[in-house]
Length: 155
Image (cartoon, rainbow, N blue to C red):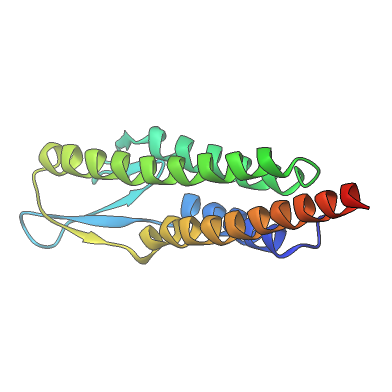
């Protein structure tokens, strides 16, 4: 049912991932120590208004957001809901892998001295934790339904 706690967790995951798509995840500091390049999931805007695209990060976050939102409405098929929640967590782990690849590639391309992480980078990690909590709640419901079914079969 939609009013279950796992639906609340998945709705919060959807909101967090939408916020993660819009907020900057960090900034590159140039060798001069003054110039900053803001790194968002969609790309990095350079000083001369050029744009270095990182659309792969945005795509992973968008797909993960859609999966989390659609998983809410799979309450009639709990095992599919469990699989989709696990898939969503794997997507978010892949997001972090892709992020580090893009970060190191862009750091070399921009000749940046350092990279400063943004707080929005923790939002997918919080989403992974909430996915785990929703997984536990969905699985608990499945076990409870199986126990009730076996009890009905005995009578």
